[in-house]
Length: 605
Image 1 (cartoon, rainbow, N blue to C red):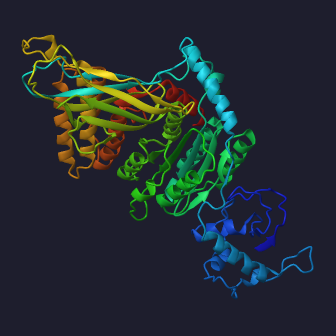
Image 2 (cartoon, rainbow, N blue to C red; image 1 turned 180 degrees about the horizontal axis):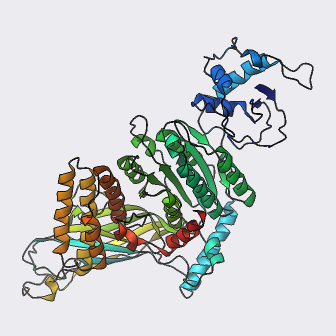
Image 3 (cartoon, one colour; image 1 turned 180 degrees about the vertical axis):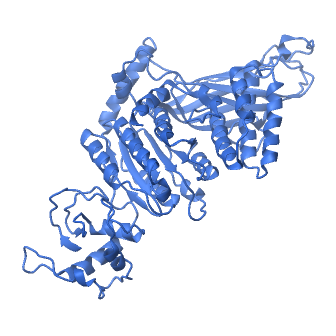
């Protein structure tokens, strides 16, 4: 092995660890016994993280490992250099330092470098704001043409529904209510493939992938194909970063790269050469590097996201709650757990803390690409961000309970004014916010005014970044002095009953996966099954599929908990993610954008 100062490499002009230019001022190079060259600081960091093989050909680096793990102080001290490496390195300059001096200096530089931020070697391709604004104008124009030239497009519509059409005015009661949000298609159904590819919001995406030893074999092969698929789907205005982790994190893309054709090819090469399985698992290292990349951005694309995939558990348990609080606003974290070895509870928690991201359980190796493709179809069709839904009721009407998973203010209920916080809404998605409402007895007869409250929306248009405030939509409830028992106003609303079944099923599933006693968990599901079967909407296709999925008996508690975690997230968020053969009820949430990207992903198997 030998060290050099800015020596050229005939085989490549980049360091395959950091993907930065190999020759840089004051950056020492290291040539391994297998004749591969790297920045010394990059290779030292890799060895310090217990990776004792050449990143390109897996040749052992035992000599370098013994040097790296010798304590180094800030003041140069004698280093025990292996005898076979003691000869001076040939140099074009007669005053060039020998190997011993160079190696001492390189080690001190390396350890100084490693003490800095884990992302200090990242770069960022800056977003061209003018180009992004021009693209936004083109998308807006396409949307207006689809809406027959309407100048103001209400991207999201809100409708209100109560469990009953009326309640006797002299009696108090507690009924269910619902707000339904609906987002239309981003582009018309007649849009060409070229328009679908070009007329979408640019994104900043960081992929954080587990490359620990358990990923060896077919899993790492398919993971690399999936990363190739993601790279190919990025447009020239999108920015992508790839972080791999075992016990340490590795910046495989040298920061956020604008996905020009040349940068795509560079990342394809990095995936092929640098993604290898080996070592333990520390999810926090990958999360920290990915969040740092997104936090330190000098420029931003309209949409930001992290995709985290792992097939295992940390070698030691960690709580990442504080770390996830540093995730920038507007960035959503989606998590993926492959097989039964991962901690579904941790990954679902990371997704929820990651601004309402999704968790996906991947039960088959060849489904990795489909799972990531589904997430891409979600990200590429975002139409609204920072969505808040404000409910305001009159007098002593008050929301007593929320049956939706979304955060609300005030946290403590009852309250006559409640604001739900949703992070994003994508093309063709629906959200149904289910709650219970206290209906007071009226002292005086109402004057034929059925309006008891309103709902309004506020959000950021992801296309043009404008703040949108929608007109208030009323809640209607008749309050006559008397109602006949067979009055149509006392018929349970079918839509509310259906969404109550969905929301309650999600809540029960969460209770079941947190129940350590498997038999008790099954009892919770059986009770919910009985409630669905006895409900007004029992014969609805969604309820029938829920019944089939809840009836399935799993071979072991681990499989049950992991699959049910995926299912409760799907139904709680009303968002499709990859589903196993036993959780088909979530298929009703799939959008055309997700379906399109899943079709593209099938080519990468």
